Amino acid sequence: MPGRLNPTLRQRRLGTELRRMREQAGLRGSELAHSLGVSAAQVTQMENGKTSVNADRLRTIAAACKCANEPLIEALIDFTVPRSKGWWERYQGKLPTGFLEVAEMEAHALKIYTWATTYVPGLQQTGAYASAVFGRISPPLPQRDIDTRTAFRSQRQQALRSGGTAHVSFIHEAALRMQFGGRKVLAEQLDSLVKDSEAGTSSVRVVPFDMDTFPGAGENIMFAEGPVPELATLQMDTAQGVLFFDAPADLASHRATFAHLSALALSDDESRTFIRSIRGQHE
Image (cartoon, rainbow, N blue to C red):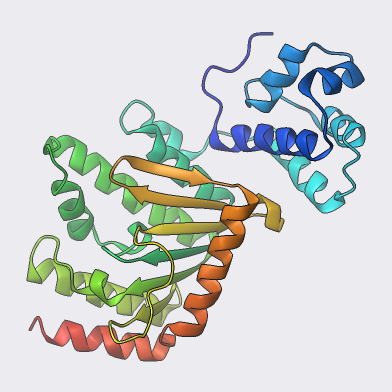
């Protein structure tokens, strides 16, 4: 059976966890292949997410690797269940793959944390603000591409809210003051943040300039909690595009960052007051 040409983010993650399981057992690919009665090439295909793995095969691999982490095994079995196509797949060929994979990650997250330092998180951007963010890209995008990206971002917001996924948003004051599209667009964006916070759509917590430290890196990041701690995913926006991280050290480091942010940031009530004060400067 030919392998998948373009495995999804979830399929690749399953393969990554199988490889991690094997490596933690100190097994080479050829040794695991011998235990399974398959070729080493088939093990490689499974670990690349290019060959499907059913529940029985996954348990056989876990047994061969002496993995006793039953919650992780059960969570990975859920990864093997075929699912209907996600709404984001309608955008294949219209948007970079990274955009679709962010939506896929969000669809499976139990809880999402964002840390924004340069612009308001995509999950909370108004249409005008999102369009202005995409419009600043150099070289400029065609208006059709800007419109498609903006519509996609809006649909991500709707999908997250309809699914009831909890979202905790930490926003640095710099991101609240940075103008994309001018004062009117920023004012409307600030109003929208307050509305989201009041409605409970997101927990919005501000980190003001006068805090005595700057937690974590300077990029906008998203941390998506999975069904077990090992299956969380970190996503980072960079000038080169969307990056994903799932190594245990990366996950531990950014859990510590968000714990620090939680202790440092203003409360939801204080944050709404703070955002309104900035909004008042744009009257």
